Length: 596
Image (cartoon, rainbow, N blue to C red; front, side, top):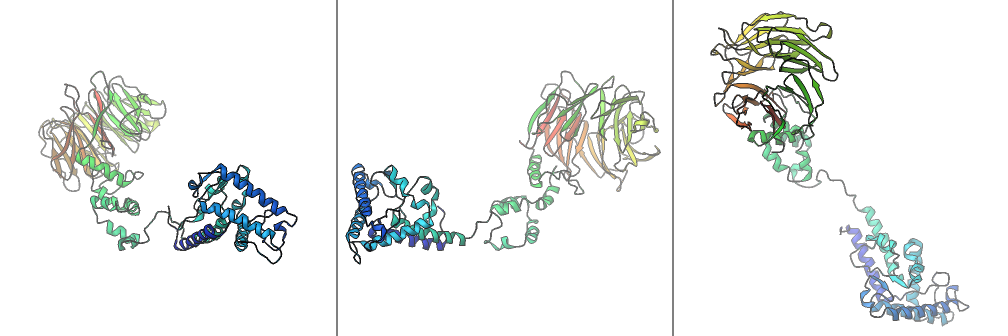
């Protein structure tokens, strides 16, 4: 029970004292023929000059005797409760009989005389008049008389009388006149106390407490910005307000930028602004500790070399000479089995493809490039190279392709100029990988390293002229199988030499600024980065996916994904902040870091 305010407690105590006085001294007052009390002994109409009052009193006494006989033995169980017949304590019954005798004596008395107990009856009558005028629920005595049942509501000390109003009104409860009279004053005082009581405010900043909680929010944000993840978590357990306060993205942004795969780039760009930063930091700890749940999304009957791309809630993956589009289910760890679309057009297997400007640009083993519109059936393919096209990239309406025929070519994406070659570049080596700079000024090719020159070379996109060689210590056969730009001046590469190399064109073009070696001397087929600290690579044996923290030299975690005795390379890797997807010869695997 909610404790009443100080004013209401005093009012309730006064009401309780009046109730006890009524129980001990005041008999039930006599009601006149009109339902209003008449003062005894003054010859008023309430006394019934023609004998009406006397007849009414006699009938009431007779009914009381019948109820007493019917409810004999139940008087002790009626303390403030309900029942048929006479109820309540024996003192209440005696008070009723005394009230009847006092009213009868007052009726016999002449003018100027008072019957026995007349003063108490007069006071009780006045109380009932006030109660009838102020409360309609307390004056409905006829409902209780109809079936011979009455209810009492005992007013206990320290309890407000309006604490259960619905029960008193809904069940037809009728209090004794003296109790109602005392209760009327209690109700009025309690109502006034309720108005004075402060309105309960919604849960918010504590009004009292440590001095820390009374600081301005700007200053509190500055103080909390120096806390680490563990301290913020403990602070959130103090109270609800601090829990909401410590969930602010501003407090977790600094921690997220230092975490693995939290959606922030090295320059601080938030790639997932719609997801709370605190939730991303929680999932980031699973990446750091290697906690995940492995699953298989798709299976194939024959060995393939699949490539895939992610866009929103869709996954695009190549299978033989088709590209299939699947939609992720809400958990992100499973796919709808029925594909959203199937894109065909090549006569041989699809070797590589990219998504750009609502188009799929694919490179096939038949030497052709295919252009497919994602949301329509528009498909165009044209002959691009004499041998298979191993790689392709597209940015800003420009397509670049590399082939086994030792050439790289530049093409426009404009619908009116599809198939018109802008530049043909003789690379003098087979081209395995290619990527366009984010500023659209150049592109880089990764070759098989069978000649006497570096396998990484940068070409001018507008003229097709060679701009620079990257590296000078590549051993023969150290072909580059995957290359990607991270910024206009930085890029990553991997390949047959079992190294991942990080290049910064502003520092040096002859030597990489950072490198990570595969521990088991396996060829690295593919790589993927979050643009900040996390790096993932796929090796050539046993489907091993490795996670690297770029601030460290050693591998962070390794996940062997091959589920069959046959060893399979990891041909392609993609990941989000919650899941990692790896395409192998026979399966498409998923590592769920959100629900490990």
